[in-house]
Every structure is written in C-alpha cells, then in structure tokens.
Amino acid sequence: MEERNKEAEVLGRDLYVNSGYLFNSRVPFKEKKMPLRILSAGTYQLYTWPKLPTWRPKGRIDWQIIYIAAGEGHFFFDGHEVIVPAGNMVLYQPKQQQKYHYLGKDRTQVWFVHFTGREVRSILNHYEIPMDGYILHTGISREYEDLFRRMRDELVNCPWGYEEMLTHLFRELLLTMHRRMTESVPRISGFVQDEMDRARNWFEDHYNEDISIEQYAASRSMSTSWFNRSFRSAVGTSPMKYILEVRIRNAQVLLETTDYSISDIASVIGYDNPLYFSRLFRKAKGLSPSQYRKVYREQFFQ
Image (cartoon, rainbow, N blue to C red; front, side, top):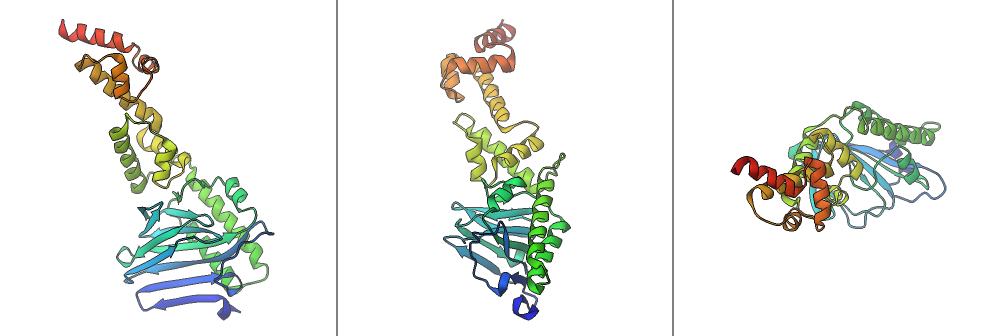
C-alpha cells in the first residue's frame, strides 16, 4: 500500500520531491457530495535544478494552496509577474489559470495541498481566508510544514481513518493561517514593507486620479482587507486617508504659490466638485481654501 501511494524521489542533489495522492491518482476531480476532500499534498525543494515550471492555461478543477517555505516563487497573475518570497501562500481556485516557476538559484522549497468539496468556499469563509486575491501573507512557521507533512504522510500510508484525519489537519492549517494573518500586532516582513512602500509611491504619483483601493490591491494579487490592514500597520494610516493627505498637501502648495481658482485647484488634485473639495480642506486644515490662501499671504507678504 505504501509503495503504491508514495511518490518520493531525490534526483541527486538537484531536486527533492515527496508527495502523496488520494487513491494513488494524480488525476484531479471535483467532489460534489462530501463537504471537503484532500486530494494530494507534498513538497518540492530545489538545490541546483535550474528551473521547475508549471503552466496550466485553464487551471485545475480542484483548489490548491502553495506555501513558500524558503526561497521564492515567480508567479504570473493576470499577465503580471509577482515574485512571492518565503512566508507567503498562494491560493488557486478552480479553473484559475496557473503559471509559475521556481529557480534553483533561489534554493526554493514549497509545500502544497490540493482539495475539493461542495463546501470548500464556505469553509474558507469560516476561517476568513481571503478569496479576492491570490497571495496570502501568512508568515513563516514550522507549524505549516508539520501540517503539510502530516497530510502527505496520511496520503502515503493510508492508516485507518486517514481521510477524516486529512480534513482535520487541513482545518487546523486554515485555523493556523487565520491566527497568523489576524495577529493584533502584525509582523511586518521585508516583503510587506516593500509592498507598502511601493503602494505609497504609486499613490504619490497618481493621487489626482480616481483611485480604487480594491483595484490596486487586486493588481498586486492581494485581498483588499489584507492590504488595508498592512498599509495601516506599515504607514500608520489607511490608504484613503493617506491619499487625502497627499491631495490636501498639494492643494496647500497651489493655494500658496498660484492664483488658480478654487475650482481649478480642486480639479488639479483630483476632485470634480469644488464644494466637496472645500469641505474636505476645511475639515483637514480648519479653514476654507480661500481663507487659507488669505491668511498665508497676509502672514508672509505683508
């Protein structure tokens, strides 16, 4: 039984693979009766193997979670390459295109699990696993590797009650992910800080445009809730408040250095409605735009 169900091979010092499959079958299927079923789990580790690519134009019919335990993965989401470093997971839903690769020079190690079932979506919702992006910022933990390894071993050895144990271990994985993603004191990794710095720079460059936080987060393969929470942790304020501060700051410069009308200034910084702009400016600075200009000029030019 063990020999039939086990895929484990070491290709010299180049590549290590060790995976287990339900019923010893690599053919995925869609489970319509059971709430949850684990189809496969395992690991890949690259040493000097140059490149390990995956290309599924139409995706798979099951779900997949990939955990980057070491190194990094090169993923393509909606035509854009995103380098996902260790400490993150990638969630693929059924029929989502899958294009990614790992490089030997990165010494990458990944763990994965494929799953299906008629209640998968509600189970993920229960553990508040975001499904409006691809990347899950879960941090690095030995707990993850232990859970993936135990799922693989259940699939390999098939002891009594192994399918029940598989669902138990998978739910424990989701619970552990939820706890790490919702810590009261988030751990700001270098990757997260880099992403938030990138976001700030983008907001600075595009502050006068109609910015959608949801669209920006999606463009970086993040869930909106995770992006908002991480931005606040890294920057100290929400994305929309940060954008407002940039707009007000630039409005001050225009009020101080130009004779543009209030309507023109509102338009320059991204507001079609000058009255709305005036209300926001007054709330932020305690004066209307006209009052601010008057006070500034009286103070510095008289």
